[in-house]
Image 1 (cartoon, one colour):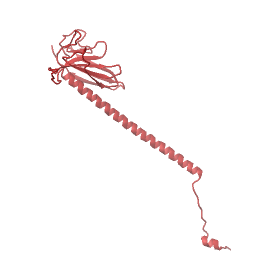
Image 2 (cartoon, helix red, strand yellow):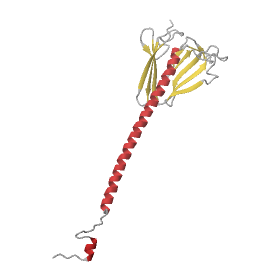
Image 3 (cartoon, helix red, strand yellow):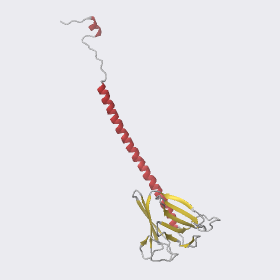
Image 4 (spheres, one colour):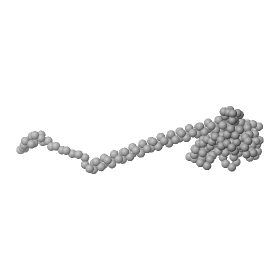
Length: 214
């Protein structure tokens, strides 16, 4: 025979109340899972940000290279057969390279015709400095490097090598100009091939028409 007292009737017949919370182990496991998931999400975010930064850096590098090629192209397209008096008692050819290290000097037209330079001709000098920077220096054709520092501009950094190759009259390319075998002082290259190699191994090249003067 079953018996129910007043307390049982007040609480409900056959009904038992349970109040249960999280145990310490469950809390620790949940926190550990949350930490792992947070770390994975953070690493994924870092990876996305690094990839995005590399993409931006690559685009910026390509943009800088394109600007450099535009400047070199304008310079070479405006080549002029004009010798240069360097102020040191020497007459430089219209176009010449350094034999000991990279460097090329030439005369170009197209500059503003000012009172200080009525001809609009400039002397251009490309060189690779000790810091791996491609540097362009220009003088008005009436100025002398001995007395004028010129307009110096850093074109590109992190450069490993720059090569100017020149098509000679016999159909071969030479890094020296005038060619070692001999050429007239006033002769300009028929074609000029420029190759830029960056420190990361990236290499680009362009071919420019010269001014054929026989």
